[in-house]
Length: 417
Image (cartoon, rainbow, N blue to C red):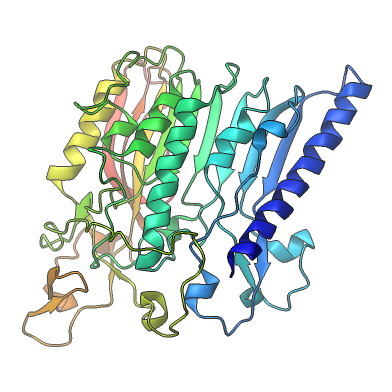
């Protein structure tokens, strides 16, 4: 796609959003009692040919919201959501004959912040995006990292409504969209910063909230500042009552929170993204069959054991934050797990494999794993997490109802936490 085509996509999307905002503004001007509006915007969908390879189906470019400051402010909008369309054909927006003819366009994450700023009485902010976000080739990861940093900058530099009390931000959309090739090295989306600016921005956003639900790839600065973090003036959540955070098994730095049952992958580190890219974000020349997704649909998911070196700082940060949440009555910090090591070898002998970036792995027979705990749930996915309920609170799927004492636990459970 050429640069001029990308500009047309941006302008088309802006024009549609602007017409929506202008229509609501006219209704507000005509009536003082328009009521409270919940506004949901769907991310753009593209019509593609089913023969397109991954580089065209999952391009790195994003749809931008041009000139958000020119949109009218909407006093009646108290709830705002930006979502991927789960059922595009059901929305009657495309006459595609099959789902293979449709593809999602990624959005510039800054538009979440910029649109919220145009709703001065906003109480709820939500997003449900991320379909195809991580179906990326290595060339795309630079744009993912850059956009996470741009989102953080937007949070720092934009005055959000003081009325905001509840956020429900799902940047991973479907739990099954998480990384399903857990042997490969992941890019370092944090460098050159010493910590993840995206996680930090979500923490800054949370201080004024009563309820926070997020699904995100994050590091410990989601809960507590890094030693080099200058944003430490107010690590206090005076009104936060409910926290539900689903985190990815992978870290923004490219490391992992979990390892295999035998310690596999514990030394995996993220790699630095090379400086070369397309500059304008357009799609590079398509070399069909060279992308990792096109070459193999294999699921190699074996990371089910917490890795103390990375998970402990994350949990300690949450504990520090929880001590500064005087009204907290429930909290759930969890991640979905799966054990599908289809990449194991048929040989009785271990053998070494080398990844594209030089990381070394040992392939093993499936029978070499101790599956005693995992075998309790043979037909379901798993989840690992910790939970807290204040005295008298309603439990999750475990715990005692109306217990006069605080309840705190962790366990591996079904993926319905």
